[in-house]
Length: 180
Image (tube, rainbow, N blue to C red; front, side, top):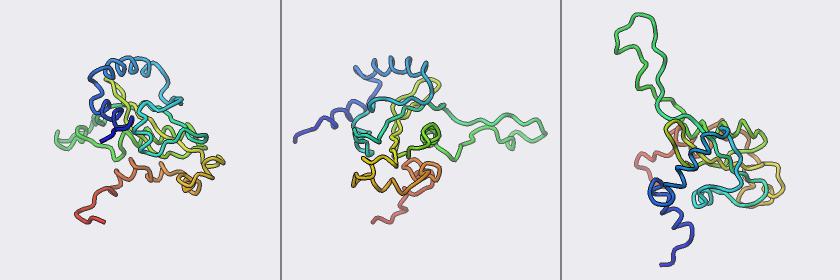
C-alpha cells in the first residue's frame, strides 16, 4: 500500500515529545511563550491536520496560533460560613473547552473572518497552543470556491458554537446508539 506525505506527518505527531519533533517542539515553546497570545502564521504547523479540517493554501484563508491557559478552574475561596463540602471551590469544570476559548479569541481579533476549525499544536507548563483556521467570508476566492462558499452565509459561527469544538460541548457528537 502506498502511503502519502500526510500519513507520515500524522505518524510523527502521534508522539510529539519523541524524536526530532520533541526537540523542535521544545524550542518552539520557548519562542511561542515569549510572543503574543494571538499570532497570524504563514503556514500551518501540522499540515496534515489542517488539510483534514478544510485548510487550503489560497487567498481568503489564514491560520492563527492562539495561546490559552492550561489546567482546571478553581473558584476563589468564599469567606462566609459553610461546611467544607459546600464551599464549591474545587473540581469546578467550565462549560466551555479551552479549545473553544482559543477559537473565540481568534474570532475577536479578526472580526471580518469566520472560524472554520482548530487543532492542537502543543503545550508547556502554563499554556496550551491551538491553531485556528479562519476564512474571509467576503473574499472572491472563497465565494467562488464550491467547497467553502457555504461559509459566506454564516456569521459568528464560533459564538453560536457551530464549530467542531462547539458541537462537542453542545453534546451533538454523542449518538446514544442511533447510527445513521
